[in-house]
Length: 308
Figure 1: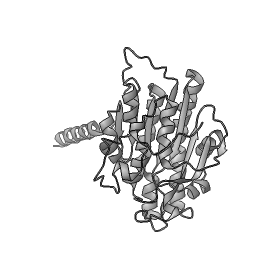
Figure 2: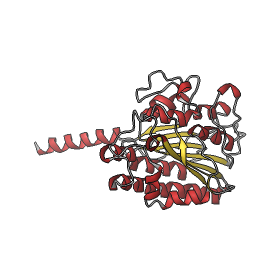
Figure 3: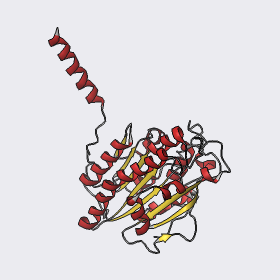
Figure 4: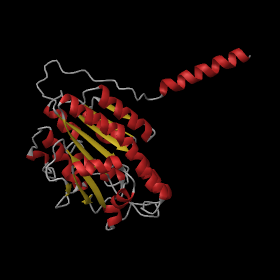
């Protein structure tokens, strides 16, 4: 009987492990007739539900370095309406406001990604030889927004630890051109404990994400040093939040609608706090400009590029 129990447990363990999503990088094949230089690349790091004032209070040496080496605003407009994650991420990833992308909540009803798609679609339209990735904790960002773009890597994980490990591996082991990453544990801490700089658990969650940033950013820095690459690194968020753990239905509350954005390249000009506050829709045109993807007026983007 003990033998059969052991066999059953081993089989069950193997079946469970087979369903586990691997953080090991499975690098996409390079194009046979590739004319891209692959020198300029992009890493967009999204921290769900991260308030700027809490970010400034937290001990975040990796993010601090990005701010010192790049330019930033702590008063970014994420849009005064539709203060849900689905709407905020849609705005960041499409470069248009909700009246165009059609998402006003977390149900994604009315989505209009056919006309206003994820920026990864714009990248692939320019050249299928761009190697793209969407590695997220919040699975809807892949199933609802990124999947129509057919990224070379599209995967979601159940926690930020696995997200960070996978991103690090893909940056170290593969030649990715554009990588979007979503961390979600800060938002979870905000909902359970409160979105506020005076909430220790919320600050702890921000500091944990900064710790995840360390190996990821080091992989980029190493690539720049060893491969003569120039990475645009952008860090931003979809919304802030209230001390009671909410952020929906707070359309006119700056604690929810005021967010932050950090932009850093290998040789950023005019480093430090920006003289103006670029809205969330400026992220997409800034990304496209860095990798020389021309913005078509027919796309009707609402943002403009940040000069780097």
